[in-house]
Amino acid sequence: MEQCLDADIIPFGCGGDYPGNVLCSPLSGVEREEYFDVLPYAEAAAQYLVAAIPDGKLPRKFKTGFSNSPQNLTHATMRDLGFAARPDGRFDVYSAGGLGPAPCIGIKMAEAVAPEKILYHIKAMLATFREYGTYTQRAKSRTRYLPELLGGKAAYKAAYSERLLQALQDGGLDLQPEATKITKRDFKLITGFRITSQKQPGLYAVNYHPQAGLPKIESFLALADYLQNVKAAELRLAPDQSVYIINLTAPEAAKVMSLTPDTAYNAFTSSVACIGSTVCQMGMGDSQSLLTSCFEEMATQYAASDALPQIYISGCPSSCGTHQIGELGFRGTVKVIKGTAHPAFTMYINGCSLQGSERLGEEAGTLLAEDIPFVLLEIGKHIAQSGLDFAAWQAANPQAIATIVAPYMKKIELLSK
Image (cartoon, rainbow, N blue to C red; front, side):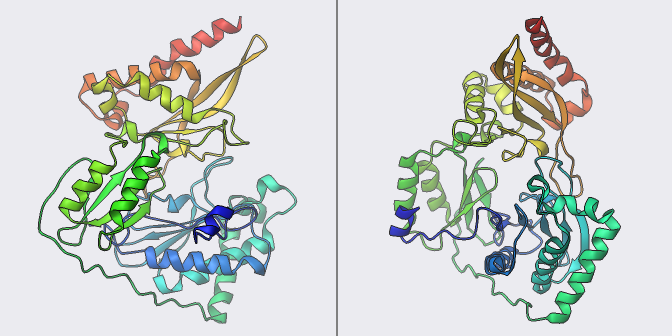
């Protein structure tokens, strides 16, 4: 932290009973399919939340998200407070959602909210929690428990609406942010797995997803050196441990790709793992080791690797790896076999974060960590042979995963005898 200050990097806000980082769709402002640019409003929300810290105690965690399209990359509909963009240039507001223990999809609190009015909703949300939230049970000091504490969703929405009305009457929080204008243009073309064509003519974004979310320092330094002289270039961190380098011409995009060879090359190698038990005090499972083992097992199994979806691994129930909303997810645990604890992970299937199709994954059994790479390899081979993608294969074969994992679960049963 002290070295950051010496480099003029000043961290503020997060930690303890304070606001979490405000999430925003990483390609907001440049994405062709977005409803509108939500970044200026996310930045205003972050500034407001930091300024609100001295006003009174906040929940144990308070996570806010802004999404610019139904892709819902920031899980805005599953946050303590989320703003989901609409085609009409307004927001739908969601609240009391969250992953981790007692996961739940957020409750729609308001529809068609004018973007300039979002701070009133943040003020109302904070006021509602400060009045009705619990501070005596730390595990339940989250907005997701407010509906239960107040007697149901209707009572919760009524309490929120009352405080929203008061905030609007108090006034003074209307926003008129200025969107950043990108004037850079080019006419050359480029395509590729990592390339996204921006809505600005001739400009591109390059995705850099270091495997397991751990970039090589050499790549970061080379990238930093090159981008110093690239006009309008920005780094946009994404929630899935990747980064987008935006506002690049075709030659600049090609150069950025050459500087970042330690990157994912398909959906499976873009998989997400939290830092895990080797670093995290809360962690039960070594998420990073598991993902590395899966990559190693799949290294020469190209068809199976290409067929698998992005997987999500969390070392504990906190869901930092968002295992609960992935098509395939794993949560760290242990299996005690004859008095000895063995690293294990509970498998989740069929989660989804797309707006309007939100779905928490279903538990599909607990497997020893050492067996999971082989389970994934077998799943990948079945999908590849079918010629379908994962979702279509799963829909056509709803019992297939249960059949594949059954022998590995039987193994645990036999070892326990």
